[in-house]
Image 1: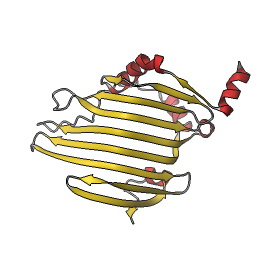
Image 2: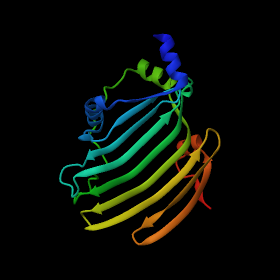
Image 3: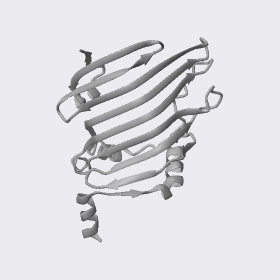
Image 4: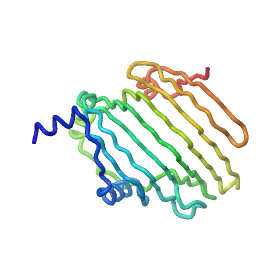
Length: 216
């Protein structure tokens, strides 16, 4: 059994895990405090860089909003390194999202729909908190991010105003200890844009209180 797992880790095997769809929906819904629906296939590739791919995902919107869905995604895929996790580093080899619609809203009282009613975590004792701090995880690298056909809609009920933002494509890299590089193209309302953003290493940007990206 152990030998079989090791072989899987180095060869890489992709399996259809769609039979676990209901369990994934329940787990995600519980974590977010919203209904989560997955209508497409769910697959996992087992390797030392395992990959999770999910298609046709919907996250329900908050109550009393104008749109039924908070998020609707045609495809979402992520690949993360196992070995870097052993030394406390989150190294993501790939994040891909395609055909995503995100509906952001704030109601007449200013309450935003992107604040989720997630279950509260129990307060840990000081000894447990100290242990968690010692074992903290660092988000170290994102080797490749690819976003395509991303539509973001915002509606402010108090002002009765709406804004639409289309991200046609975003391609970027943020290797460990190397500068972040992002290329964006899309449309805000009726105006086209094409930007190149550069910044310092990802760990530095995440630790900073101010943005460290510059347009080039």
